[in-house]
Length: 346
Ligand code: 13P
Ligand code: SF4
Image 1 (cartoon, helix red, strand yellow):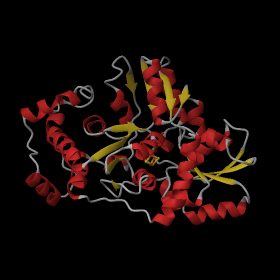
Image 2 (cartoon, protein in one colour):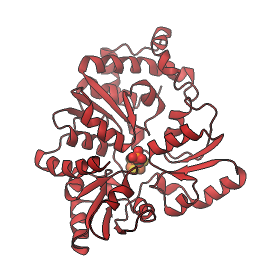
Image 3 (spheres, rainbow, N blue to C red):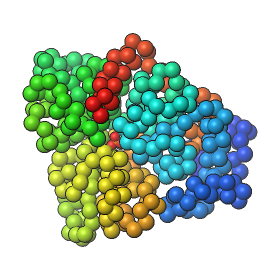
Image 4 (cartoon, helix red, strand yellow):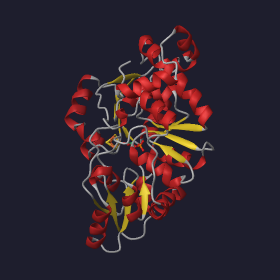
């Protein structure tokens, strides 16, 4: 395994834990490997097994739980995650878990959402630089500017935003409930931020007029409608399912569109012989073992932010407590209102 942290971090971890790959360590984690052996070669698991064992032991010792997004790599998803899900599921779980520490397997806005919902808990993000092109595209001042432009319109902000932006919004949404949240707002006009593509996809499912911020997910805008038409030509039997952060012309080419959890459920239920998942490509790897009859065809776009979370930095964060997320309580209270309103409407 290529160590992604600094050499100082590596030597401190080696001094604190037995990180030497061994057959015994492999055996101890073999039940977890069974869930990922279609996508992780044995030699890779051998190198990862000591980290997986150390993290799982330390979680119990430190009363910690790993909440992992569906885009985490399969070693995290199957090796150390306690709860996996889409953004909405993870937000809901953050309000329910009993442990005193949450390790967020995901990006910074997800950890901030967990902290907003569970202020009494320690929430750790293993790499603070794990950001999001959507969250970075808008500020609270931008929201105020849109409010001034469209007086009286409710502001629905995607959870892929900072606490400041959530606090400046009326309510949050995720990709799994966006249309429902928009429909529930008073008035004929709704402001959606920051994902312009999600907003345009939602506009096709609602009678409300939507005005939107032109932010984009750097992963999903890479998919092109032409590319999908080419796949259709060569793989006419393949099912194409896409995430609503993709441009509308891409979603128009898809057989189904939904949140990451919605896409996973769709594959589980329909078990297509061939499928193209038009989303971050760790997701196909994560469910490959569960549905061995399904062939996952390309393309593969990875999120560089999600990829920043590794077994090494999870272990480091758990060991040292580094990466604690703080949200000032006055701001958190306002942001909580926007997230809680969404959870209440679910
Ligand atoms: P969901 O898991 O809520 O569909 O979100 C996708 C995403 O891009 C999260 O960063
Ligand atoms: Fe943000 Fe897109 Fe990465 Fe999700 S996949 S964290 S929306 S950049």
